[in-house]
Image (tube, rainbow, N blue to C red; front, side, top):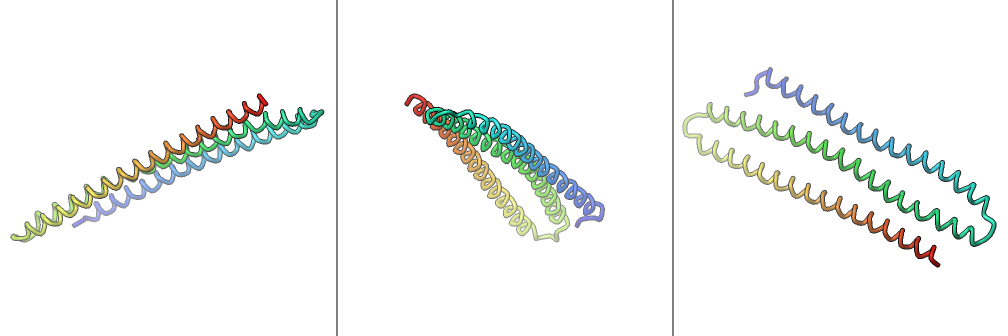
Length: 183
């Protein structure tokens, strides 16, 4: 049975964990806002430069060259932006996941302690019931760990696929731009 001190200690730990997770989430949002502000500033500056370059175009060939020169960096910048977004989401998710795993481990330990305390105070002859409960808990923990590992692997594969797709898009963009320039 939980004492009042144990209950309040658990409540305090949960509140601290909640605020820790909230701070991690806000750090992720902060990074995202910084990234978007930087992108907006860069886009504004590049738009101004592009407008000035467009005003200096004298013929169709110059216009085609300008268009080609503007498209290449745009694709690369979009890919870089995508990578930055993925990095922010991945790092924030990893930090939140790490904190949640620590909280879950503590919860599992506390639950095991409660079961052990209940087993010590259980009436004679209830050893089999306690053993069944402990086995069920161990089985549930093992299943949860398996699902957690599979989820992490799926996230890693998705991240690797996103990175590969981004790199492929950049290479295709560069190849296309080189072919246009050569023509």
